[in-house]
Length: 186
Image (cartoon, rainbow, N blue to C red; front, side):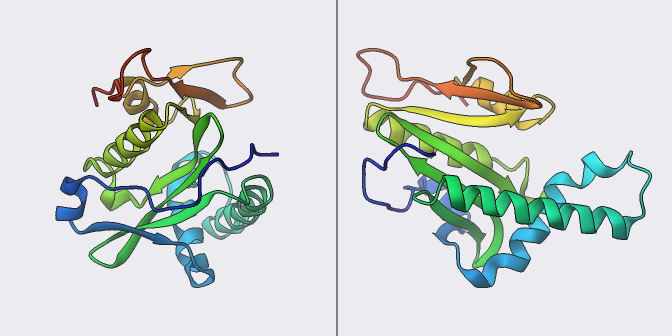
């Protein structure tokens, strides 16, 4: 069960560089379901390449996995902010953020392949860190050890904490004592 929300839900404040690129956030709606399933498939597809199934079987499996993940997030993070990342009005990703009493948990951050590696994910993570730092809180995320984004999280100051649970590593960013400004390099 997730920790109680400490502040009212609000949109993450995006840096001017993202806004200038046409990037924005909006609350996820029921009509986003097809997009979200397509996004999930794009994130997980490479993991399925070595599996000796047909593409149709892989898509079916990933659709089931998406439904289970969606159910898990809505059950265990019902008070999180579920945002769609848009660029020029078109959905390109998602960021799910749970603001707890002591921690800002990035439940999920995903971008379509054409929008990865352009600095959008890093800018979103820095925005989370800045908000957490301003509130005197940590920021955290679970990430697979093989996920290329893990290198970004390390550059931003996230550190592994606790035991690795299955393929997931729990990473935490903590504000430096006495510093009002976030300690991020990214």
